[in-house]
Length: 49
Figure: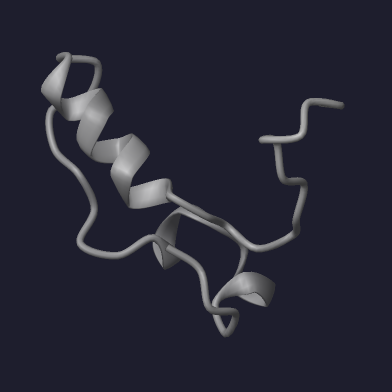
């Protein structure tokens, strides 16, 4: 976590890219259309991905 390339934030970042990778390698069968359903409602209004 102390690496310079690691960013710690409360904003969900690259969630959909990670989900697409998980689908590609066969760990999940389908991806969500948006990242918001995977997080608590308090984070739905932030600019995430």
